[in-house]
Amino acid sequence: MARLIYMAITSLDGYIEDATGGFDWGVPDEEAHAFINDLQRSVGTYLYGRRMYDVMSAWEADSTLPEQSPAMRDFAEIWREADKVVYSRTLEATATRRTRLERSFDPDAVRELKRDATADVGVAGPELAGHAFAAGLVDECQIFLAPVVVGAGKRGLPDGVRLGLELIDERRFADGMIFLRYGVRP
Image (cartoon, rainbow, N blue to C red):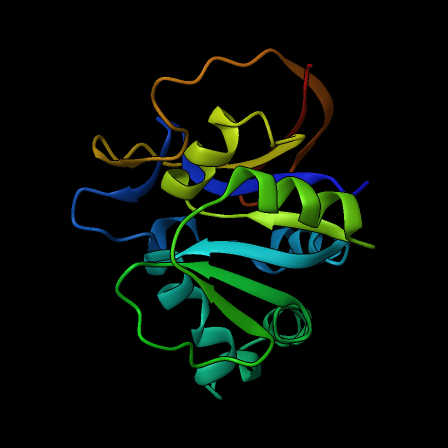
């Protein structure tokens, strides 16, 4: 059975976006980005809400992104080769390859996906991840803490969910970012 992994880059105070919707403060340096890429190689399918999909689709749509660094070029290839499922009631069609559209999050369908998958499944964005957490589907959290406090914005972890976690791995990066990998206790 594949793992369902929630990955996020957050500020030290727990936000994935600041109060203006910005997240440029969380862009990893080359070392951290290469590490993220290595983690992402195990993911065969990404689950996204509409907004996260719109942000991530730049990895296929913007031809200049992969030219910015070797790590960005590598991530663009990893992302393009993975399957994507987008949950949206308003999106008419997807604009990227290997992408299918679902109108609502169905925990049973995700359980089946995990059971049948030959690679891990990633879920991104706190709102969609909140549904996965609430349904008991998340097996692992991979959190990158950026060395910044933004004060307000969109929280990286959902409200109303309580989980026991076990620290599996940790790593520090030269730019001050810290990686924390937790397994979700049953």
